[in-house]
Image (cartoon, rainbow, N blue to C red; front, top):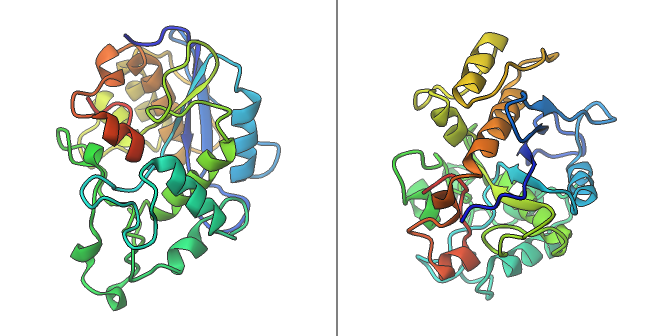
Length: 284
């Protein structure tokens, strides 16, 4: 069964960039119904990751489903370890704790964690060896119809890399300290907030975007995509960055997808996968 207590839906376009203020972070939310999503402003010029953590914790008791656009874990099933030769735990929470304890970057960053392990676990360039040796995917990233993430969490080079954002995100998940359930590692709650992993390209595809053409950079394109998801047109925003439009569109998609029972019970998601690797919500 799908959960029906959620009345608000938020999508967070995340960033693993160095520093404390991140223009690449955008937070959008919408209410149940068809009203357009809106961006949540930050009191500063750009969000800090810790401010996002604080925002989530303030809403822990609210009936809100929150989607984060980063990988919640590293591959485990295929090799029997998240970081072979380094980690011993067999669940994602142990990985989150390890990453947080071994990271000293400001604002929950993880660039230093990754740099210290280049050539061992992470690929940052040709000096690290053959890139193919680092390409390992989670089960959910290879289990469906072609919308798989283009990069793995171990590929830390290039515009498509997700490593820095994902490992920074794992620090945030650890800092939550169990105060907000994270699906599928935790059972779905009957009340209060819940966090899921999202992939904004899935929302774009659901809105009719062709593969590889998922970015929206103007008001008309955003409104057309929102309409395809049953949403009213948005209120104009100051800048149509990929981050802002991804968050707005994905919030509208999350509102609709949350009512699909099959998405909460993926056929390929075993108990072991749910515990060690997690799952991207929206992959059936």
